[in-house]
Image (tube, rainbow, N blue to C red; front, side):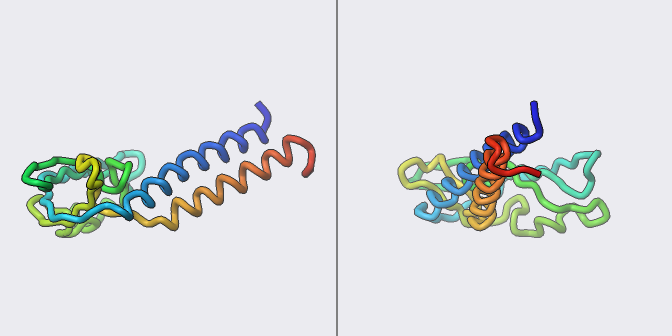
Amino acid sequence: MQAQDWWLAIGVLLLLVFSWQTYACVRALKWRKTTGRIIERTVKRNPRDPFFANVDLLYSFEVDDYTYVSSNVKPGMEQMMTFAPPFLRKDYFLGEKYAPGAQVEVIYDPNRPRRSALECGDIVVPILGVIAGLVILIVSLLFRFGALEL
């Protein structure tokens, strides 16, 4: 496999991943809001990368007298990765906002309340990812078909 093939694959992958995240963020802008409660918070550290941690949250909320339980932090994302240097307290990066028992705002799809999240997320990052994927894809195709040379 040639170098431009790798760049082509990376461009396609970036485009697919960030397109999905952009779609999920835009879709979630139309969701309704309700109040929920954090049931559990688990922090998983990777020993090979001590400056970041994966955070699993479990929360409950009610819609039309039915209680739902979810772990989606952002639309389409069950886990949240956060900067968490080991020399900081365990709760520093999450504070009391997502502490077990804390009251939180939950956004949910009114057509399918099981589809929910705690944060809509920043739409700028997925859009920049789509743009980066497109640029890499176009440049790698130009190199692949000889329109550009080094």
